Length: 304
Ligand SMILES: NC(=O)c1ccc[n+]([C@@H]2O[C@H](COP(=O)([O-])OP(=O)(O)OC[C@H]3O[C@@H](n4cnc5c(N)ncnc54)[C@H](O)[C@@H]3O)[C@@H](O)[C@H]2O)c1
Image (cartoon, rainbow, N blue to C red):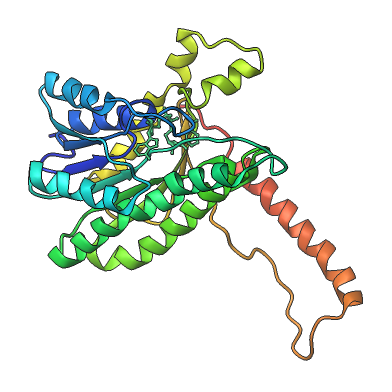
C-alpha cells in the first residue's frame, strides 16, 4: 500500500533539485502534488516554467499533479499555494518548505538587497506558506497534517560567507520548534531537514574548488538521497515525530541534537562576580567540549 494515498502535498521549489525529487517520490507514494517553483536563477532573479515540466512528468508516470509559479516570498504567494491545492484536489495535508536561493558574500560586502532577498525566500517564505496552511488546519480541524522545513548546516553549524543564508536557516529551525508546539493540538507534526546534496546550488561550490562533478558523484550524492526521509516523515509512520532535525544526504540519515543547557552553576545569593566567572567559565567550556565529543562519537556512521 502506498504511504501517501489520498494525501495532498504542496512542495515549494519543486521544479528542480531536492524539491523535484521529493515531489516525484511523494507522487509515487500516491500523493496528489502541487509543484511550486517560479523557476528562478540561484540568486533568485528571473523566472521560467519548470514547475509545469515536473507536474507533467508526474502525470506522465500516472500520478496527479498541478503546477504553481507563485513566489513563496510573498504572503499572497503562500495563500495562492493553499488555494491551488484546494481548487485542484479539495484539500491539503503536507507542506514541504523547500524553495531556496543563495547570495553568498562575507559581511564586509553584503548589501542590503543580498540580505533581504535571502531572508525573504527562506525565512519569510516559510512564514508565508505555513500560515495559511496552519489556519486551514485549525479552521477545518484537519488532523494528521505535516510541515517539513528546510534548514542547513550553514545555519546550524555556521558557514563562512553565508551570514544571510545562515541566519535564515537557523531561524527556520527555531520557527519549526514553535510551529511544532502550536500545531500539536491538531496532530500536525513539524520537522526540519538539514540536507546535503549535489544540486545546482552546491555543484558550483565544488567546481570553484577545482573539482569536477561526474555522474557517479551525482549517483552517490544527488538530491534523490534527500527525498526518502521527507516522504517517510509525511507518511503514517511519522505521526509521533515532531520538532526534530534530520540530517541527511549521500546515503546518510541522522538526527541532530537540539539546543539544551548541558551544565550550569547556580549562585543562591547575589549576582556572579567576575573573579567567580574566571573559575566557572572554563568548567562550562570543558563540559561543552565533552558534550560535543560524545555527540560526535554517537553520531559516527553506522553502515547498513
Ligand atoms: N543542496 C544542498 O546541499 C543543500 C544544503 C543545505 C540546505 N539546502 C536547502 O535545500 C533546499 C533545496 O535546495 P536545492 O539544493 O534543491 O536547490 P535548487 O536551487 O536546485 O532548488 C531550489 C528551487 O527553489 C526555487 N525557488 C527559489 N526561489 C523561489 C521562490 N521565491 N518561490 C518559489 N520557488 C523558488 C528555485 O527556482 C529552485 O528550483 C533549499 O532550501 C536549500 O537552501 C540544500
